[in-house]
Length: 277
Figure 1 (cartoon, rainbow, N blue to C red):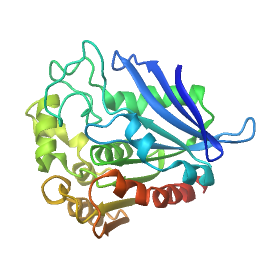
Figure 2 (figure 1 turned 90 degrees about the vertical axis):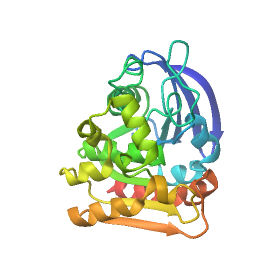
Figure 3 (figure 1 turned 90 degrees about the horizontal axis):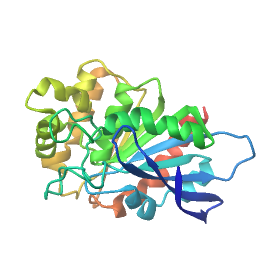
């Protein structure tokens, strides 16, 4: 791995790192905050998946997670949202292509060659982190925002043995039932909606996937709430499946990092409690 930058913050070190991904066939950048710790000590890890148009930098610069992670003794990993660079296909739209990988493995051309974010997040990056950072891979949590909330929910539901805790900020809970999802899943996976179910949290739950519990925060002034996000669909699926879910509707909050940063420490403390036990 190549170090892009390091900085001290809240009794820890904020790293930005670059490596070549064999999964995407491109360079990939991610950030990692590592609290100070005794030599040889391994810390739990919280993965954070970002939303449409974002890179690793949005959460790193605006997420306000470092103090809470230092207090909870949790490593925080923020990957990019898609492959990038020369030869990587893209389109002019902001909700598809680069910056909009949807944490899936594309099967349609021209996307299939590079857009393999599911394998990158589920396999390649965790192996790299386990090799190079002081993480305890038996204590993992995952969170995300919007498209990244969709990613966090679906990654956890497909890999329940890996994650002790799962939370989301304003997630896309059912890509099968919103315009963002319809566009992305059609473009990356083709028209067969049965293949989409592996990338829809509500469908995964209906098909038998389970996690111990969920925490979701959603602003009630979010302009995407009713057309794109629909958190009540996730709540309904969880209730039917017996999955404990806490859906907190936050009055007056929108979809931005003003919202995320307000409740980030709550989420990290929630994860920290479950990652310690």
